[in-house]
Image (cartoon, rainbow, N blue to C red):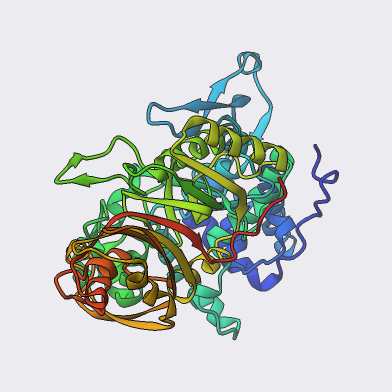
Length: 543
Protein backbone atom coordinates (compact mmCIF):
# COMPACT_ATOMS: atom_id res chain seq x y z
CA UNK A 1 0.00 0.00 0.00
CA UNK A 2 1.41 3.41 -0.99
CA UNK A 3 1.71 6.24 1.46
CA UNK A 4 -0.83 8.25 -0.49
CA UNK A 5 -3.30 5.36 -0.30
CA UNK A 6 -3.02 5.34 3.51
CA UNK A 7 -3.76 9.05 3.66
CA UNK A 8 -0.19 10.18 4.41
CA UNK A 9 0.97 13.61 3.41
CA UNK A 10 4.42 14.91 2.72
CA UNK A 11 6.35 16.04 5.77
CA UNK A 12 5.78 19.80 5.88
CA UNK A 13 5.52 20.33 9.62
CA UNK A 14 9.24 20.87 10.28
CA UNK A 15 10.24 24.50 10.14
CA UNK A 16 13.48 26.41 9.71
CA UNK A 17 13.98 26.69 13.48
CA UNK A 18 14.02 22.88 13.70
CA UNK A 19 16.96 22.58 11.29
CA UNK A 20 19.84 22.73 13.84
CA UNK A 21 18.01 20.30 16.12
CA UNK A 22 17.42 17.87 13.25
CA UNK A 23 21.06 18.03 12.18
CA UNK A 24 22.39 17.48 15.70
CA UNK A 25 20.10 14.54 16.28
CA UNK A 26 21.10 12.99 12.98
CA UNK A 27 24.73 13.31 13.98
CA UNK A 28 23.78 11.77 17.34
CA UNK A 29 22.43 8.72 15.48
CA UNK A 30 18.71 9.31 15.92
CA UNK A 31 16.03 7.84 13.67
CA UNK A 32 13.50 10.13 11.92
CA UNK A 33 10.69 9.33 14.35
CA UNK A 34 12.82 10.18 17.38
CA UNK A 35 13.74 13.43 15.64
CA UNK A 36 10.03 14.15 15.24
CA UNK A 37 9.55 13.52 18.96
CA UNK A 38 12.28 15.98 19.91
CA UNK A 39 10.79 18.56 17.54
CA UNK A 40 7.53 18.07 19.45
CA UNK A 41 5.66 17.01 16.32
CA UNK A 42 2.15 16.04 17.33
CA UNK A 43 0.83 15.01 13.91
CA UNK A 44 0.27 11.28 14.30
CA UNK A 45 0.08 10.60 10.55
CA UNK A 46 3.69 11.74 10.14
CA UNK A 47 4.94 8.94 12.40
CA UNK A 48 2.96 6.36 10.44
CA UNK A 49 4.67 7.02 7.12
CA UNK A 50 6.92 4.20 5.88
CA UNK A 51 10.35 4.47 7.40
CA UNK A 52 12.24 4.91 4.13
CA UNK A 53 9.96 7.76 3.08
CA UNK A 54 10.54 9.50 6.41
CA UNK A 55 14.28 9.16 5.99
CA UNK A 56 14.19 10.42 2.41
CA UNK A 57 12.02 13.42 3.27
CA UNK A 58 14.18 14.28 6.26
CA UNK A 59 17.22 14.37 4.02
CA UNK A 60 15.39 16.54 1.50
CA UNK A 61 14.46 18.90 4.32
CA UNK A 62 18.13 19.37 5.18
CA UNK A 63 19.25 19.57 1.56
CA UNK A 64 16.87 22.46 0.97
CA UNK A 65 19.05 24.72 3.16
CA UNK A 66 20.04 27.97 1.33
CA UNK A 67 20.15 26.27 -2.05
CA UNK A 68 23.46 24.52 -1.42
CA UNK A 69 24.16 21.34 -3.36
CA UNK A 70 25.77 19.60 -0.39
CA UNK A 71 23.91 16.59 0.98
CA UNK A 72 24.20 16.73 4.78
CA UNK A 73 22.64 13.27 4.93
CA UNK A 74 25.75 11.79 3.33
CA UNK A 75 27.98 12.96 6.16
CA UNK A 76 25.96 12.09 9.20
CA UNK A 77 25.65 8.87 11.15
CA UNK A 78 24.21 5.74 9.48
CA UNK A 79 20.52 6.43 10.23
CA UNK A 80 20.53 8.90 7.34
CA UNK A 81 23.35 7.55 5.17
CA UNK A 82 22.76 6.62 1.53
CA UNK A 83 24.40 3.30 0.93
CA UNK A 84 24.21 0.39 -1.47
CA UNK A 85 22.39 -2.53 0.06
CA UNK A 86 21.43 -5.97 -0.88
CA UNK A 87 17.68 -6.18 -1.20
CA UNK A 88 16.35 -7.87 1.90
CA UNK A 89 13.16 -9.30 3.05
CA UNK A 90 11.93 -9.20 6.63
CA UNK A 91 11.02 -12.49 8.22
CA UNK A 92 9.79 -13.30 11.65
CA UNK A 93 12.10 -15.40 13.75
CA UNK A 94 11.00 -16.88 17.06
CA UNK A 95 13.86 -17.08 19.53
CA UNK A 96 14.30 -19.84 22.03
CA UNK A 97 12.88 -17.77 24.90
CA UNK A 98 9.65 -17.04 23.01
CA UNK A 99 10.52 -13.51 21.87
CA UNK A 100 9.91 -12.26 18.35
CA UNK A 101 12.77 -10.65 16.46
CA UNK A 102 12.90 -9.43 12.89
CA UNK A 103 15.90 -10.70 11.00
CA UNK A 104 17.26 -9.72 7.59
CA UNK A 105 17.60 -12.62 5.15
CA UNK A 106 19.24 -12.30 1.75
CA UNK A 107 16.94 -12.76 -1.23
CA UNK A 108 17.80 -14.16 -4.62
CA UNK A 109 17.45 -10.68 -6.06
CA UNK A 110 20.50 -9.59 -4.07
CA UNK A 111 22.74 -11.95 -5.91
CA UNK A 112 21.92 -10.18 -9.14
CA UNK A 113 22.67 -6.81 -7.63
CA UNK A 114 19.98 -4.72 -5.93
CA UNK A 115 19.05 -1.10 -6.20
CA UNK A 116 20.24 1.75 -4.09
CA UNK A 117 18.18 1.74 -0.86
CA UNK A 118 18.04 3.65 2.35
CA UNK A 119 19.02 1.26 5.12
CA UNK A 120 18.45 2.46 8.71
CA UNK A 121 21.05 1.69 11.32
CA UNK A 122 19.72 1.05 14.82
CA UNK A 123 18.62 4.33 16.37
CA UNK A 124 20.89 5.56 19.14
CA UNK A 125 17.91 6.79 21.17
CA UNK A 126 15.04 4.29 20.81
CA UNK A 127 17.27 1.29 19.99
CA UNK A 128 15.00 0.27 17.13
CA UNK A 129 11.64 0.65 18.89
CA UNK A 130 10.46 3.25 16.35
CA UNK A 131 12.03 1.40 13.47
CA UNK A 132 11.33 -2.21 12.56
CA UNK A 133 9.68 -2.95 15.91
CA UNK A 134 6.69 -0.81 15.02
CA UNK A 135 6.28 -2.10 11.48
CA UNK A 136 3.62 -4.53 10.25
CA UNK A 137 5.89 -7.59 10.38
CA UNK A 138 6.33 -7.19 14.12
CA UNK A 139 2.63 -6.42 14.65
CA UNK A 140 1.77 -9.63 12.78
CA UNK A 141 4.07 -11.57 15.10
CA UNK A 142 2.24 -10.16 18.13
CA UNK A 143 -1.15 -10.86 16.53
CA UNK A 144 -0.11 -14.46 15.90
CA UNK A 145 0.53 -14.79 19.62
CA UNK A 146 -2.87 -13.22 20.38
CA UNK A 147 -4.80 -15.41 17.97
CA UNK A 148 -3.09 -18.61 19.11
CA UNK A 149 -4.11 -17.86 22.71
CA UNK A 150 -7.82 -18.22 21.82
CA UNK A 151 -9.00 -15.17 23.77
CA UNK A 152 -12.46 -13.74 23.23
CA UNK A 153 -12.34 -9.92 22.97
CA UNK A 154 -13.95 -7.01 21.15
CA UNK A 155 -11.23 -4.43 21.89
CA UNK A 156 -7.81 -4.38 23.49
CA UNK A 157 -5.43 -2.26 25.50
CA UNK A 158 -1.81 -2.40 24.40
CA UNK A 159 0.92 -1.94 26.98
CA UNK A 160 4.66 -1.93 26.43
CA UNK A 161 7.66 -2.04 28.72
CA UNK A 162 10.87 -0.52 27.39
CA UNK A 163 14.38 -1.13 28.75
CA UNK A 164 15.40 1.59 31.24
CA UNK A 165 18.53 2.53 29.30
CA UNK A 166 16.32 4.23 26.71
CA UNK A 167 15.74 6.96 29.29
CA UNK A 168 19.50 7.44 29.65
CA UNK A 169 20.01 7.77 25.90
CA UNK A 170 17.05 10.10 25.56
CA UNK A 171 18.49 12.25 28.35
CA UNK A 172 21.83 12.44 26.53
CA UNK A 173 20.09 13.56 23.32
CA UNK A 174 18.02 16.07 25.27
CA UNK A 175 21.11 17.70 26.77
CA UNK A 176 22.55 17.91 23.25
CA UNK A 177 19.67 19.89 21.76
CA UNK A 178 18.41 21.74 24.84
CA UNK A 179 20.54 24.81 24.12
CA UNK A 180 19.19 25.12 20.59
CA UNK A 181 15.64 24.89 21.90
CA UNK A 182 16.33 27.61 24.45
CA UNK A 183 17.59 29.85 21.63
CA UNK A 184 14.11 29.63 20.12
CA UNK A 185 12.81 31.49 23.19
CA UNK A 186 10.53 28.55 23.93
CA UNK A 187 10.37 27.18 27.46
CA UNK A 188 10.60 23.47 26.77
CA UNK A 189 11.20 20.73 29.30
CA UNK A 190 12.16 17.14 28.54
CA UNK A 191 8.65 16.12 29.56
CA UNK A 192 7.27 18.29 26.73
CA UNK A 193 8.76 16.00 24.10
CA UNK A 194 6.48 13.44 22.49
CA UNK A 195 7.01 10.44 24.72
CA UNK A 196 8.40 7.29 23.14
CA UNK A 197 5.50 5.13 24.33
CA UNK A 198 2.97 7.60 22.95
CA UNK A 199 4.61 7.77 19.53
CA UNK A 200 4.92 3.98 19.44
CA UNK A 201 1.21 3.51 20.05
CA UNK A 202 0.34 6.13 17.44
CA UNK A 203 2.06 3.92 14.91
CA UNK A 204 1.02 0.42 15.99
CA UNK A 205 -2.62 0.97 17.00
CA UNK A 206 -3.85 1.35 13.39
CA UNK A 207 -1.77 -1.67 12.39
CA UNK A 208 -3.36 -3.79 15.12
CA UNK A 209 -6.80 -2.57 14.01
CA UNK A 210 -5.97 -3.62 10.45
CA UNK A 211 -4.71 -7.03 11.53
CA UNK A 212 -7.13 -7.90 14.37
CA UNK A 213 -10.21 -6.03 13.21
CA UNK A 214 -10.88 -4.56 16.68
CA UNK A 215 -9.91 -1.13 18.07
CA UNK A 216 -7.50 -0.21 20.83
CA UNK A 217 -9.38 1.00 23.90
CA UNK A 218 -7.75 2.11 27.14
CA UNK A 219 -10.76 0.80 29.09
CA UNK A 220 -10.72 -2.66 27.52
CA UNK A 221 -10.42 -5.66 29.83
CA UNK A 222 -8.24 -7.50 27.31
CA UNK A 223 -4.59 -6.48 27.57
CA UNK A 224 -1.71 -7.28 25.27
CA UNK A 225 1.63 -6.51 26.90
CA UNK A 226 5.04 -6.62 25.27
CA UNK A 227 8.32 -6.44 27.18
CA UNK A 228 11.34 -5.23 25.23
CA UNK A 229 14.97 -5.74 26.21
CA UNK A 230 18.37 -4.76 24.86
CA UNK A 231 21.15 -6.69 26.64
CA UNK A 232 23.83 -5.05 24.49
CA UNK A 233 23.31 -1.69 26.25
CA UNK A 234 22.33 -2.87 29.74
CA UNK A 235 25.51 -1.29 31.12
CA UNK A 236 24.28 2.20 30.13
CA UNK A 237 22.54 2.59 33.49
CA UNK A 238 25.36 1.36 35.75
CA UNK A 239 27.01 4.72 36.38
CA UNK A 240 23.80 6.08 37.88
CA UNK A 241 24.04 3.65 40.80
CA UNK A 242 27.28 5.33 41.90
CA UNK A 243 26.12 8.86 41.13
CA UNK A 244 22.68 8.49 42.82
CA UNK A 245 22.81 5.44 45.12
CA UNK A 246 19.65 6.48 46.98
CA UNK A 247 17.58 5.81 43.85
CA UNK A 248 18.56 2.17 43.56
CA UNK A 249 17.52 0.13 46.54
CA UNK A 250 17.00 -3.63 46.21
CA UNK A 251 13.38 -4.77 46.28
CA UNK A 252 12.08 -8.29 46.84
CA UNK A 253 9.88 -8.34 43.75
CA UNK A 254 12.37 -6.74 41.37
CA UNK A 255 14.94 -8.72 39.40
CA UNK A 256 17.06 -5.62 38.93
CA UNK A 257 17.42 -2.35 40.82
CA UNK A 258 17.56 -0.55 37.46
CA UNK A 259 13.85 -0.04 36.98
CA UNK A 260 12.59 2.67 34.68
CA UNK A 261 11.26 4.73 37.59
CA UNK A 262 14.56 4.49 39.46
CA UNK A 263 16.54 5.53 36.37
CA UNK A 264 14.23 8.49 35.65
CA UNK A 265 14.55 9.61 39.27
CA UNK A 266 18.34 9.42 39.10
CA UNK A 267 18.43 11.38 35.83
CA UNK A 268 16.42 14.14 37.50
CA UNK A 269 18.98 14.30 40.30
CA UNK A 270 22.29 14.05 38.43
CA UNK A 271 23.94 17.25 37.20
CA UNK A 272 24.73 17.80 33.53
CA UNK A 273 28.44 17.87 34.36
CA UNK A 274 28.37 14.56 36.17
CA UNK A 275 26.26 13.02 33.44
CA UNK A 276 28.71 14.01 30.71
CA UNK A 277 31.63 12.77 32.82
CA UNK A 278 30.14 9.32 33.07
CA UNK A 279 28.20 8.81 29.85
CA UNK A 280 29.61 9.09 26.36
CA UNK A 281 27.72 11.45 24.08
CA UNK A 282 26.83 10.37 21.49
CA UNK A 283 26.86 6.82 22.86
CA UNK A 284 28.29 3.87 21.01
CA UNK A 285 25.91 2.91 18.22
CA UNK A 286 24.13 -0.38 18.92
CA UNK A 287 24.65 -3.29 16.58
CA UNK A 288 21.20 -4.80 17.08
CA UNK A 289 17.73 -3.48 17.89
CA UNK A 290 15.68 -4.30 20.96
CA UNK A 291 13.95 -7.65 21.07
CA UNK A 292 10.54 -8.55 22.45
CA UNK A 293 11.43 -10.98 25.22
CA UNK A 294 7.87 -11.48 26.41
CA UNK A 295 4.44 -11.15 24.82
CA UNK A 296 1.57 -11.75 27.20
CA UNK A 297 -2.21 -11.70 26.77
CA UNK A 298 -4.55 -11.32 29.74
CA UNK A 299 -8.27 -10.81 30.07
CA UNK A 300 -9.69 -8.90 32.97
CA UNK A 301 -11.62 -10.97 35.49
CA UNK A 302 -15.28 -11.75 34.92
CA UNK A 303 -17.80 -12.59 37.64
CA UNK A 304 -20.41 -15.33 37.72
CA UNK A 305 -23.10 -15.19 40.40
CA UNK A 306 -25.97 -17.39 41.52
CA UNK A 307 -27.45 -19.08 44.56
CA UNK A 308 -26.49 -22.52 45.83
CA UNK A 309 -28.20 -25.15 47.93
CA UNK A 310 -26.08 -27.53 50.01
CA UNK A 311 -27.75 -30.83 50.90
CA UNK A 312 -24.82 -32.57 52.60
CA UNK A 313 -23.79 -32.44 56.28
CA UNK A 314 -20.26 -33.54 55.42
CA UNK A 315 -19.35 -30.87 52.86
CA UNK A 316 -17.47 -27.65 53.76
CA UNK A 317 -18.08 -24.45 51.85
CA UNK A 318 -14.38 -24.05 51.06
CA UNK A 319 -11.56 -26.64 51.09
CA UNK A 320 -11.02 -27.85 54.64
CA UNK A 321 -7.27 -28.13 55.15
CA UNK A 322 -5.68 -28.30 58.60
CA UNK A 323 -1.88 -28.33 59.02
CA UNK A 324 -1.51 -29.07 55.35
CA UNK A 325 -3.82 -32.10 55.49
CA UNK A 326 -7.10 -32.15 53.62
CA UNK A 327 -10.03 -33.23 55.81
CA UNK A 328 -12.80 -33.47 53.22
CA UNK A 329 -12.49 -34.62 49.63
CA UNK A 330 -14.37 -31.67 48.13
CA UNK A 331 -16.20 -28.43 48.91
CA UNK A 332 -19.05 -26.27 47.67
CA UNK A 333 -16.73 -23.85 45.87
CA UNK A 334 -14.86 -26.64 44.09
CA UNK A 335 -17.98 -28.49 42.96
CA UNK A 336 -19.24 -25.27 41.35
CA UNK A 337 -16.00 -23.65 40.19
CA UNK A 338 -14.46 -26.60 38.38
CA UNK A 339 -17.17 -26.38 35.72
CA UNK A 340 -16.86 -22.60 35.37
CA UNK A 341 -13.09 -22.88 34.97
CA UNK A 342 -13.52 -25.43 32.19
CA UNK A 343 -16.14 -23.49 30.24
CA UNK A 344 -14.63 -20.01 30.56
CA UNK A 345 -11.05 -21.36 30.27
CA UNK A 346 -9.86 -19.29 33.22
CA UNK A 347 -6.51 -19.59 35.00
CA UNK A 348 -7.96 -19.57 38.52
CA UNK A 349 -10.92 -18.40 40.60
CA UNK A 350 -11.90 -16.62 43.80
CA UNK A 351 -15.08 -17.67 45.60
CA UNK A 352 -17.20 -15.44 47.84
CA UNK A 353 -20.70 -15.71 49.30
CA UNK A 354 -23.20 -13.97 51.52
CA UNK A 355 -22.04 -15.58 54.75
CA UNK A 356 -21.11 -19.22 55.16
CA UNK A 357 -22.50 -22.34 56.76
CA UNK A 358 -20.60 -24.92 58.82
CA UNK A 359 -19.65 -28.24 57.28
CA UNK A 360 -22.57 -30.00 59.05
CA UNK A 361 -25.19 -27.38 58.15
CA UNK A 362 -27.44 -27.64 55.11
CA UNK A 363 -28.55 -24.64 53.04
CA UNK A 364 -32.11 -25.06 51.78
CA UNK A 365 -34.87 -22.82 50.39
CA UNK A 366 -33.77 -20.42 47.65
CA UNK A 367 -30.13 -21.00 48.57
CA UNK A 368 -27.22 -18.77 49.49
CA UNK A 369 -26.01 -16.01 47.12
CA UNK A 370 -22.49 -16.53 45.81
CA UNK A 371 -20.11 -14.98 43.29
CA UNK A 372 -17.03 -16.42 41.62
CA UNK A 373 -14.28 -14.29 40.14
CA UNK A 374 -12.72 -16.00 37.13
CA UNK A 375 -9.14 -14.84 36.61
CA UNK A 376 -7.82 -14.37 33.06
CA UNK A 377 -10.67 -16.15 31.23
CA UNK A 378 -10.32 -16.94 27.54
CA UNK A 379 -14.10 -16.73 27.11
CA UNK A 380 -15.91 -13.69 28.51
CA UNK A 381 -19.40 -14.05 27.05
CA UNK A 382 -21.94 -16.85 27.25
CA UNK A 383 -25.39 -16.78 25.68
CA UNK A 384 -28.36 -17.29 28.01
CA UNK A 385 -28.90 -20.81 26.64
CA UNK A 386 -25.24 -21.68 27.22
CA UNK A 387 -25.39 -20.37 30.78
CA UNK A 388 -28.50 -22.46 31.41
CA UNK A 389 -26.70 -25.50 30.05
CA UNK A 390 -23.71 -24.79 32.32
CA UNK A 391 -26.03 -24.56 35.33
CA UNK A 392 -27.54 -27.92 34.44
CA UNK A 393 -24.09 -29.47 34.07
CA UNK A 394 -23.18 -28.36 37.60
CA UNK A 395 -26.44 -29.71 39.00
CA UNK A 396 -26.05 -33.06 37.24
CA UNK A 397 -22.52 -33.53 38.53
CA UNK A 398 -23.37 -33.84 42.23
CA UNK A 399 -26.30 -34.47 44.55
CA UNK A 400 -24.59 -32.49 47.30
CA UNK A 401 -24.83 -29.05 45.67
CA UNK A 402 -27.32 -27.44 43.31
CA UNK A 403 -27.18 -23.93 41.80
CA UNK A 404 -29.82 -21.60 40.40
CA UNK A 405 -29.99 -18.13 38.78
CA UNK A 406 -26.49 -18.55 37.32
CA UNK A 407 -25.50 -15.36 35.49
CA UNK A 408 -22.67 -13.00 34.59
CA UNK A 409 -22.51 -9.90 36.81
CA UNK A 410 -20.26 -6.87 37.20
CA UNK A 411 -17.68 -6.41 39.93
CA UNK A 412 -19.74 -3.53 41.33
CA UNK A 413 -22.88 -5.68 41.59
CA UNK A 414 -21.17 -8.02 44.04
CA UNK A 415 -21.46 -5.24 46.60
CA UNK A 416 -25.17 -6.04 46.88
CA UNK A 417 -24.30 -9.52 48.09
CA UNK A 418 -21.85 -8.24 50.69
CA UNK A 419 -24.45 -5.85 52.08
CA UNK A 420 -26.46 -8.87 53.16
CA UNK A 421 -23.76 -10.33 55.38
CA UNK A 422 -24.53 -7.94 58.26
CA UNK A 423 -27.56 -5.87 57.32
CA UNK A 424 -30.11 -8.50 56.25
CA UNK A 425 -31.92 -11.37 57.97
CA UNK A 426 -31.55 -15.14 57.80
CA UNK A 427 -33.95 -17.92 58.72
CA UNK A 428 -32.86 -21.18 60.37
CA UNK A 429 -34.33 -24.47 61.53
CA UNK A 430 -32.59 -26.13 64.51
CA UNK A 431 -33.18 -29.57 66.05
CA UNK A 432 -32.50 -29.13 69.78
CA UNK A 433 -31.90 -31.63 72.57
CA UNK A 434 -32.48 -30.81 76.25
CA UNK A 435 -31.07 -32.62 79.25
CA UNK A 436 -34.21 -32.34 81.40
CA UNK A 437 -37.63 -33.47 80.38
CA UNK A 438 -39.62 -30.77 78.60
CA UNK A 439 -43.28 -30.29 77.79
CA UNK A 440 -44.90 -28.46 74.94
CA UNK A 441 -45.71 -25.45 77.14
CA UNK A 442 -42.04 -25.22 78.20
CA UNK A 443 -40.83 -24.47 74.67
CA UNK A 444 -43.96 -22.55 73.67
CA UNK A 445 -42.78 -19.55 75.71
CA UNK A 446 -40.07 -19.02 73.08
CA UNK A 447 -42.77 -18.20 70.55
CA UNK A 448 -43.63 -15.00 72.41
CA UNK A 449 -40.07 -13.65 72.47
CA UNK A 450 -39.55 -10.90 69.87
CA UNK A 451 -36.42 -8.86 69.07
CA UNK A 452 -34.32 -10.71 71.64
CA UNK A 453 -30.86 -9.12 71.87
CA UNK A 454 -27.85 -11.36 72.48
CA UNK A 455 -24.35 -10.55 73.66
CA UNK A 456 -22.14 -12.95 71.75
CA UNK A 457 -18.47 -13.16 72.60
CA UNK A 458 -16.44 -14.56 69.71
CA UNK A 459 -17.13 -18.33 69.79
CA UNK A 460 -14.30 -20.60 70.86
CA UNK A 461 -14.55 -22.57 67.62
CA UNK A 462 -13.77 -19.52 65.43
CA UNK A 463 -11.45 -17.66 67.81
CA UNK A 464 -8.42 -18.77 65.76
CA UNK A 465 -9.65 -16.76 62.75
CA UNK A 466 -11.84 -14.01 64.24
CA UNK A 467 -10.81 -11.22 66.63
CA UNK A 468 -12.03 -11.43 70.22
CA UNK A 469 -15.05 -9.15 70.64
CA UNK A 470 -18.56 -9.03 72.05
CA UNK A 471 -21.10 -8.62 69.27
CA UNK A 472 -24.73 -7.67 69.82
CA UNK A 473 -27.04 -9.73 67.62
CA UNK A 474 -30.84 -9.90 67.45
CA UNK A 475 -33.22 -12.85 67.29
CA UNK A 476 -36.23 -11.30 65.59
CA UNK A 477 -38.70 -14.18 65.99
CA UNK A 478 -38.82 -17.82 67.16
CA UNK A 479 -41.35 -20.56 66.47
CA UNK A 480 -41.09 -23.84 68.39
CA UNK A 481 -42.21 -27.29 67.28
CA UNK A 482 -42.42 -29.84 70.13
CA UNK A 483 -41.20 -33.38 69.25
CA UNK A 484 -40.77 -35.34 72.49
CA UNK A 485 -39.60 -35.00 76.10
CA UNK A 486 -36.02 -34.20 75.08
CA UNK A 487 -36.34 -32.80 71.56
CA UNK A 488 -37.95 -29.89 69.79
CA UNK A 489 -37.39 -27.99 66.57
CA UNK A 490 -36.94 -24.24 66.63
CA UNK A 491 -37.46 -21.96 63.62
CA UNK A 492 -35.59 -18.66 64.01
CA UNK A 493 -35.43 -15.43 62.06
CA UNK A 494 -32.24 -13.62 63.03
CA UNK A 495 -29.92 -10.80 62.21
CA UNK A 496 -27.23 -11.88 59.79
CA UNK A 497 -24.06 -12.81 61.61
CA UNK A 498 -25.78 -14.47 64.56
CA UNK A 499 -24.07 -17.62 65.83
CA UNK A 500 -27.04 -20.04 66.12
CA UNK A 501 -25.20 -22.99 67.63
CA UNK A 502 -23.88 -20.79 70.42
CA UNK A 503 -27.33 -19.34 71.02
CA UNK A 504 -28.54 -22.89 71.69
CA UNK A 505 -25.79 -24.30 73.93
CA UNK A 506 -24.39 -21.03 75.32
CA UNK A 507 -20.72 -21.67 74.45
CA UNK A 508 -19.76 -21.97 78.14
CA UNK A 509 -21.57 -18.75 78.93
CA UNK A 510 -20.03 -16.72 76.10
CA UNK A 511 -23.48 -16.11 74.51
CA UNK A 512 -26.11 -14.58 76.80
CA UNK A 513 -28.99 -15.28 76.96
CA UNK A 514 -29.16 -18.72 75.33
CA UNK A 515 -31.72 -21.52 75.01
CA UNK A 516 -30.20 -23.38 77.93
CA UNK A 517 -30.46 -20.39 80.26
CA UNK A 518 -33.99 -19.53 79.11
CA UNK A 519 -35.30 -23.09 79.64
CA UNK A 520 -33.18 -23.71 82.73
CA UNK A 521 -31.45 -26.80 81.38
CA UNK A 522 -28.46 -27.93 79.39
CA UNK A 523 -29.29 -27.72 75.69
CA UNK A 524 -27.43 -28.72 72.58
CA UNK A 525 -28.04 -28.53 68.86
CA UNK A 526 -28.27 -31.75 66.85
CA UNK A 527 -29.02 -30.42 63.37
CA UNK A 528 -29.07 -26.98 61.79
CA UNK A 529 -30.43 -25.89 58.42
CA UNK A 530 -30.33 -22.49 56.77
CA UNK A 531 -33.83 -22.04 55.36
CA UNK A 532 -33.36 -18.63 53.74
CA UNK A 533 -30.79 -15.89 53.22
CA UNK A 534 -32.86 -12.76 52.73
CA UNK A 535 -30.64 -11.01 50.20
CA UNK A 536 -32.44 -10.01 47.02
CA UNK A 537 -29.45 -10.77 44.81
CA UNK A 538 -28.61 -11.93 42.24
CA UNK A 539 -31.82 -11.27 40.32
CA UNK A 540 -34.00 -14.35 39.93
CA UNK A 541 -34.06 -15.77 36.40
CA UNK A 542 -36.96 -17.42 34.63
CA UNK A 543 -36.61 -21.17 34.35
